[in-house]
Structure formats: C-alpha cells, structure tokens
Image (cartoon, rainbow, N blue to C red; front, side, top):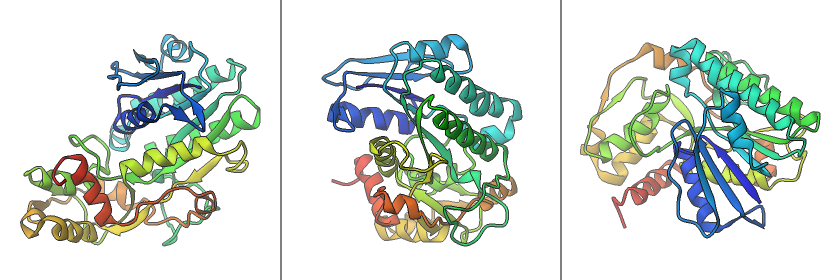
Length: 321
C-alpha cells in the first residue's frame, strides 16, 4: 500500500506518519511506501519501509505532480491554511484552501486509478443560528472564509467521488486540543493554549467568555478518526462522502476546572482574560455539539473526557509518568 500525506509536516500529519511508521500497515495491508509532503520538507520517522519526504506546494502544477508521482493508493489530504489566517488574508485562504484543493483533486482524477482520498473539513463549515446539538442532516452555513472554503471542498470531494475519480471520504474534525508546540494563527488556538501554556510555566490569554462551549477532540483521537475513515468500505458515508467526527462538548470554564483538578489552582491562575472580539465572533459562531449519528453507527472513536485529554497531553510532554 502506497500512502501520501499532504501537510505531512503539520501536527496531525506528523502524528499520523509516526503512527503508520510504528504499525507498518494500514487498512489491514502492509505499507510499502509513505510519502510526506509539505511546503518545507518534513522530517521522516524511523520505519521498516521506505519513507520519502518532499517539499511541494499544492498550489503549483509541479508540486502536485511531485506528490502524485508514485501513484498513491491512499491519500490523506491535510494541507491547509488555518482559520484565523484564512480570515485575515482572503486571497491566501482561497488560494490554498480552495484553489489548490480543487486543482489537486482534478490531478487525482487524471491518475485514472480511483485512489482512496481521506480529506478533512471543519466545524467551521457550520455557523449562524445553530441548534444546541447539530444533527447530521443540518445544512452548511459557514460564517467565515475558512468555513466557506472547507464547505466547498466537501462538495468537490463528493462530486469527484460520484464521478469515480476517487474513493473520497471527508471528516469534519472537531477543534483539536491539546495541540503541542507553539500557538498558531487558528482562531481556535487558545483552546489548546489555555492548557498547554500554563503546563509549560507560561501565561495564556483567554480571548472569549468562560461560558463558551467548544467541540473538541484530542490529537490521538483525530489520527484514529482519519485511520478509521480510511478503513471503511466505499460509499459508507453516503452520497455526501462526509461525516462529522465525534468529539466532546465542554465549556472553557470546564476545561480550566479540569486543569485545576490535574495540577492545582496556581496553574489555572496563569490563564488571563484578554477579550478579543474578532476571535470571539469566529469561534463563538461555531457549533457547540454534534449528534454524530452516522459516526457513532460506523464506530468512529471518541475521547473519554476533558480530564483524559489533559492527562494524555501531560504524558506526551513527559510531565507525568
């Protein structure tokens, strides 16, 4: 099985690559080659099979050709500009999140091999006047450029799948928390920051009201979600070729209470309220919870609790045994 990961240098892409390198197989088949592509050549994990790392821009024909040169059997398309950056720079967001995606899907079409393609969408594809729990059948109503780009990407993947150009399956991932590393330009970056930074001995800015509820999943759950999507038979997600990934709904205050339970009140005191109306408007318009009826029926994974998510991050960071 030949596998390509675009965005292979990103947090989820790298984590997925490490997971595949350890297992040496995917969907019950041995991995014969793994290609990791990103704007900057990503590092390769140790593995018992060949791993190729490349610097490639999906916005160029040359970059797309380089990525697809090995005629991959399975593609994880994770390359994207994050929400805050897409909202701040209209042209960049559309160039990366839509135009490059459309061109990449079209190039996959011309492979004529109908590869399996696992793509990611976002809770930002929904917005506006939402029910407390968003059902699978709810229409897409994005209220920011990132969500709009992701919603269009879902439709493109479904159409290419319908036409037999690829075996597509798209997962709307919850907001991922706790992300390791440093803050990024995502509007949701604080959802990791209010846990990550205090544990690292730093202050964290809280740009929203503590009562705000968010829909989250851990990095490991996100990776397992993508792998589960790849394992499903063709057509399992229906004509839309999309599923809302499972998550947990927690308020910011509940996250901070879990942090306090894990490491004490002095850590929680490092989170400082600094209201940001732009961030609050973007994240506040996202869904607070999903029904995830199809994802549950199909056996997609879900985190146990916010306490376990924080504990997993602390284990990853070697803060506990």
